[in-house]
Length: 343
Ligand code: PEP
Ligand code: MN
Image 1 (cartoon, helix red, strand yellow):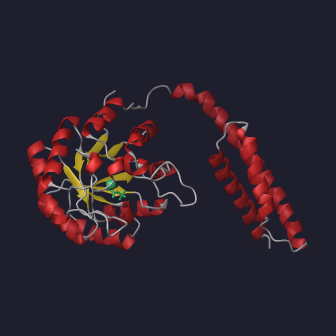
Image 2: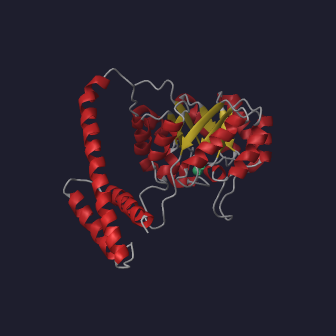
Image 3: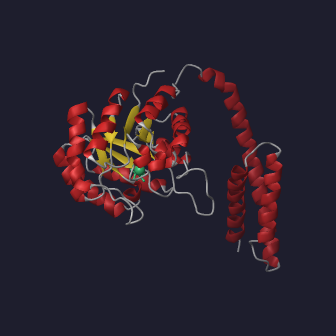
């Protein structure tokens, strides 16, 4: 299917050498990407890992732009980064997840971005705080930036709940951003979500199947020897395959076929609300008894029992454990709130 109207960004995690930048750019030339990416200043957790080549890499990216006709973009985190890239003629700049987590830093960048007519990409923050993501976008809009793209890059998993992902996709985040800002293009960065090359394709496909607007993918001419994020970078050939194999979805005239099923969903939700209201009434009564007898509201052993039993019940219906935990946590919290209100 056609890939028109989608936004595709590809390039190495970091610019490492002129040769590496140009080799990767050349290999990507035939993929018809919208922007070539390469980080110059890398926001690394450890001061001992590769920090990026900094300003000296600007001319390599400009060369990639001139030689291969690619639009170029990089991450900016300080006023100096913004000024250097604006002076050099970058077509797009992105604000990274760590910077978006800090409203002071975003505001400072916005002051230096004022008057920039390129595209500004805004990653979601490290945590699942969607207000910070939206806030950063609003700050850019307030200084007159017209071309903004939100980049969904997932959320750092809790140390207590390790997952197969480097960053949990947390699809609820782009879904909620779309609800709040229906006209904002949202693309996914499957590389930083996946953390490993062989997971990138499936995350990318999920983003497209969901109906998001494109992808930012890390592509390196020699991923094995990359100085940062080696495990997650694709070769240009693998990226070309990824594009080739993506299935695209389109709004179509088949809404009619969904009508009956949607009616069923509406009915089920209506019943769910009645049941939840009943559950809260009962828990209010329990709260009263606890209060009369000076019993603590939170009963850990009972909660653990509820959780385990519901997980077993739900298993019989093929509902996965995490979903049960998430729902039970919300239901239990609502009961606790109810009982706390009555004291
Ligand atoms: C990156 O895209 O290279 C990067 C550092 O991303 P993030 O800010 O999403 O971690
Ligand atoms: Mn990276």
